[in-house]
Length: 364
Image (cartoon, rainbow, N blue to C red; front, side):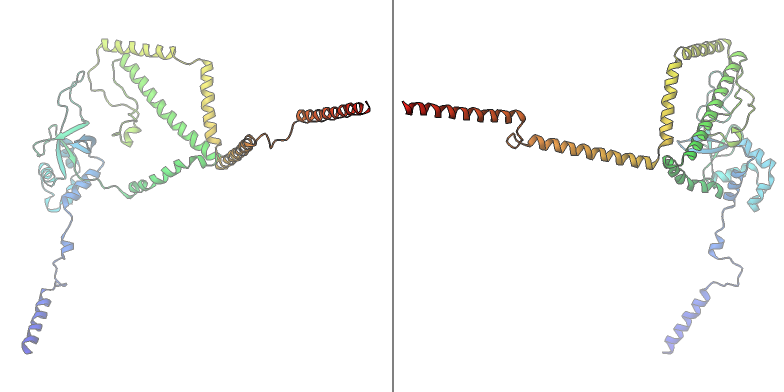
């Protein structure tokens, strides 16, 4: 009994000694698992607006990438960003980039098209298609680096994603909106569409005129249809400097002839006034039908249709019953009644004549 009690006390003593000391300065395991400083550094650099970056396609995946020289100039102009690295803040730019590559936070890429296209002096500054470079080391000379981790979006950018189903439902319920709401939505959408088409038309007309007459490639408005266009680029009016080679005069004359032929073709096939009036009336009728539709009118129309169907069904049943009735059950017509009365009168006259002949024979 003493041995057993002594063994139990020894086990309790071992358990107490193996328990963590809460008064010690050693952090627990959860606190020891700190987030990688290079991960935090990469997220900070990616979210910084001064690092110039673009979007491209890498192995059928859209990625955000930057140039090596832009990364070096960014760290040179913003040395305070290195403070996130704590003990590694004094590392060189090349060493920091190589550590990011080793941790798979970055991947070095190369342009897919490595030859200069006809009519251009040099390769594209920001290629749209990339491929993985064999040597994963940092370089500033025509080197591109793509982020491999998902970018964290702030809360104000995440919340709109939950409103997309609500917007879809609202679009589906457009026919049941009040008439004023329909008019507001219709004219707003038509105005936005007209603005976009007008900008594209003016943009193309200015580019074509300056290209043909001056040989300059000038886009006064950014490409609204481009996926990689940022919000700042969409509101940029003045164009960037044209760095491409000036086109030949033969090319400009060719495009001028094509433009003239296209305008003449459109003018030749343009609808006349009567056709335009018909198209306008047809479109106006379609719009009026959409705007004037309401659930009450639709339900009343369905009820009227059901009543018409029931009336038509009743008349068809009566006609079928009349067709199934035989000639014996039918009422005699006026002609048949006249024929019967005439037959009875003739029969009475014949009987009177027979009776008169019998009387003569009896007297004889």
